[in-house]
Image (cartoon, rainbow, N blue to C red; front, top):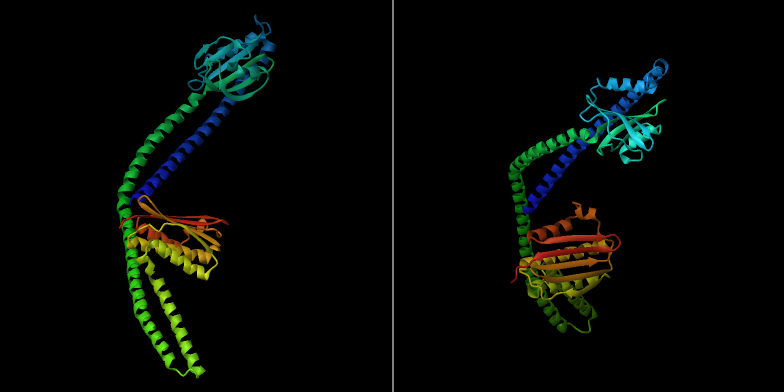
Length: 434
């Protein structure tokens, strides 16, 4: 249940994060669009004002030659007079007209809304006059940078042909960003409220369903565990019946054959050969009965414990394969209750079966030890290495069975494979000391 709640919280966090990312991305894209539109507007304003001033200058050069202070002064006076009636743009929008006087930039006009002002001159190489300096050098364009007030602005700059003047149309960057900051804050506030309400509703309506699913899974797991227990009990009963009844019958038969051999005519080879054949078949049957009984329920597991049963299982596999086993870290002192010991032994059997069938390993190291309130079993081979997709594949019923056996006892299992280097299976079960 706790894991399910954690998964739901992670899902909610992912959905919340995705929603906020979408909101911020939308606001950012809108800001970029508005920024580009503002750039285009400033460039158009600067260029139109510059071209207008150039036209006035050309007119004055022909018709205002008798102006007391010269044609340039006539052009400036008309331009300034026109700007007295111009409302400007934005809250911080501003037109600047300036020229170079020695090593300084002299401002001739600074128009913000209906107010006209002339800022103090600044050094020509000052970083606060970059757009003006570029225009005075004959360049045109737009940039983001500090103005004469040392406030970051978006500024379009244009040179005035035939006049040693620079025209700049600019607006504070903060004014462009302000509505998007407000929109973002509003979106976050409203979004947080909507998401919060959605989370409450999602949790309330999904909780009964999740609880039902969790309960069903737990019931299925308990049912599976019960089936395993019944299976183990049945196998134990059959193993004892096979071992005791068949074993006793075969032993008695073996004794009868031995007595019969003593009474047979020693000069009749056919009788001797037949009796030896029967005796050999009985021995093979006794061995088969012992093997089947052990496979159904290892007698060593009940008598000598888990470690000895694991050692016996390894010896059986060594008879049929060339795999080398390292049992140096097999702790004989590990004690578990019968149910946990059986579960861990069956996991061990399934792991060895997988190694023999699929791993193509030549060496297997086995560890069994007590770690505080857990018992840890690790089986490591040097085979081809299991891959992640194989671990999660629904067809991997053996691995699924291992997981289910471990989960019944609130344990953990970890499969780690490295292609070409082998696989490590680590199982931890809580200890219920006996």
